[in-house]
Amino acid sequence: MASSAVQIQPPNGKVIRQTPRSLAHVVLRTTPENYKPMTQFYCNLLNAHVVHADPVLTFMAYDDEHHRIALICSPDALPKPAGTTTYPTLTALAQQYVFLKACEKPILPLWTVNHGPTTSMYFRDPDGNKIELQVDNFDDVDEANNFMAGPKYDMNPMGTDFDPDEWSEYILSKALPNGEEGLSPTEVKALKMRKDIGERKELPEGF
Image 1 (cartoon, rainbow, N blue to C red):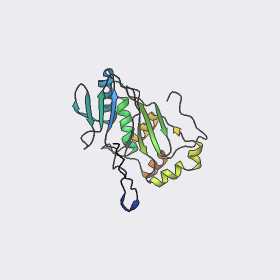
Image 2: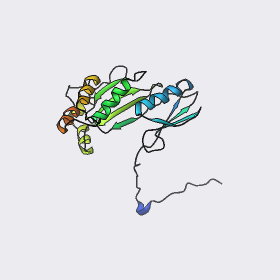
Image 3: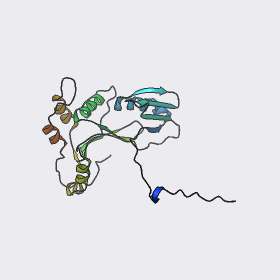
Image 4: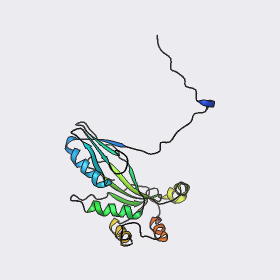
């Protein structure tokens, strides 16, 4: 006898959607040859540390969560899209850029761009996944949404490229002795404001 699907009736006939508090963990499958390079890459990229590692699974953390990134070693793994990591200040992102560039095997961005809503740096891990490190350019979500719905974003949804060396040198020259943000609110606003370059609808070549 075939069973019928149970119809769950929501209270008051209304379906309620819930948004998670955060995206807690990202799990990536990688090949045996890239297992250790991927671990080192994400430890460097995110200033993370390994909390567990065995021949099949590695867990990494960088805050009070028990782990944020997990790697699964699998011979049949294929590269998958990775995610986005947001930094609290321009100074924090600039410091991370300088650190990654100074690694024994330098980790350099594929693309550095002010999209308008974000100031972003894109990297590629050893498996070919792209990772975006960013700073939000608007303090208010409505402002960001309004920008993306406006004519400037319609004309140029890609953004305006910037030189990461010049950008980071200027920002870090203003950093406080303890390494915290030293830019004034006016300087932050100016650096976050996207420069108009006219129409741009294409991604950079090779991205």
